Length: 481
Ligand code: NDP
Image (cartoon, rainbow, N blue to C red; front, top):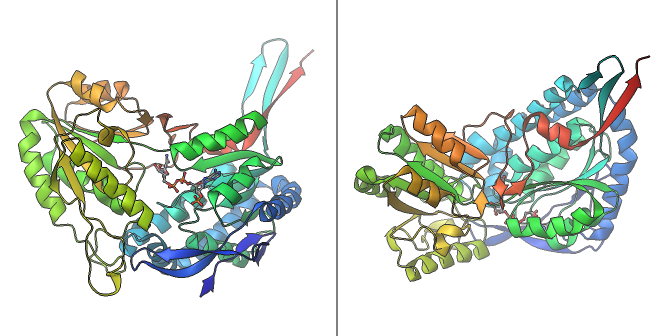
């Protein structure tokens, strides 16, 4: 069986413990590879390797770093199909989705930051008649990047690309549940000739390998994407050490549909924003609020459209809904359907395990689920489910829907559907979310600030913000006379 290896100091290495964890293919419900059960000793080696690489990498010109990163880009592009298939097998997502979204986005992440570093500049402040101040932005050193399982290579590269482009050396840990494409990336880095120690990938459990990265005294910053509870655990360790922290956490995003919207566009997009990647995208809109005059029409059409989605083998091209990432996640999602029933929810569609035939008969599949009749403040509507479960609810006024939308402790993203421009601005201004989409969803421009407010996170990724995060600012004040 394939054994995934760590990537430390430019080489593929076994974990020092010589222990491995099972890696499942969720579509068939079987172990198909083994992953290093790394611990603090592997992390120690990785931090050491990164520390050795830092003086040279940080002093290279942005253009030379750009050239290295672009070599990786070309190799990812060459292996697009292979990487998409690996992502699909590891995660359960449709291969077509990985090929259209996940892997191209990994390419874009590297391209974007390889070039952004060459356009990065700093400020100068003139204290008239007295002095000129300029801001030096110097790469932090060794940094830690920890990413989740839902968009494995997409989010992994979203962190490591700006860190490397800014001149930092990285110790990264992908989710233990979906390690495969990070492993394949490490092989591509070797092929691209990335200098040893610049990027180190340590596989293993969050509580062991992940927390060792967070707690290491020589790791200057942690860029983390994952659950809110894990974010709290990380902050508890990192904050007293005064590490820089970027935390991209959970969400419970509202999708607000006004009666004057472009109906067809809204319906098509709402199917995607609810159920893409089996609802396992932090930006999925899981609470759908519909203005009352449109409610019954929307309900009928939405249930009809969603019932047409094909649940199937993720490797088949016509599959729309693949497998849930793991058995335990499947159980968690189903437990929320039970909770919704207890909270008087009416299941309009789905709510059950989907049974497949053939090679996927033991896989982890759930029917896309639509629930109505839930109070806006019940647990089902307040807690992150992170699966193919949405609730729908009518509203009468803007004030009322804003109260519903802003009622959770999360504040990641929101979608608003209306043709009324003034209302769009007004509602966007009042929504407590870091990202607002008007008449669209998941339309991304990598220059924009990305992140959440409230318990959805601290800090923003994207654009020059991410490059700034991985640098230390130093003000140099020069007296003129
Ligand atoms: P987790 O928080 O469980 O894990 C995220 C990563 O952190 C994994 O690599 C995990 O390793 C690691 N980890 C776990 N515990 C620790 C620890 N104590 N110290 C250091 N690292 C640790 O999240 P999931 O992987 O379950 O991802 C789903 C969550 O991610 C959802 O809440 C979702 O909303 C959020 N998310 C947020 C996004 C955003 O941009 N705001 C984007 C995508 C997802 P291991 O896998 O081994 O446990």
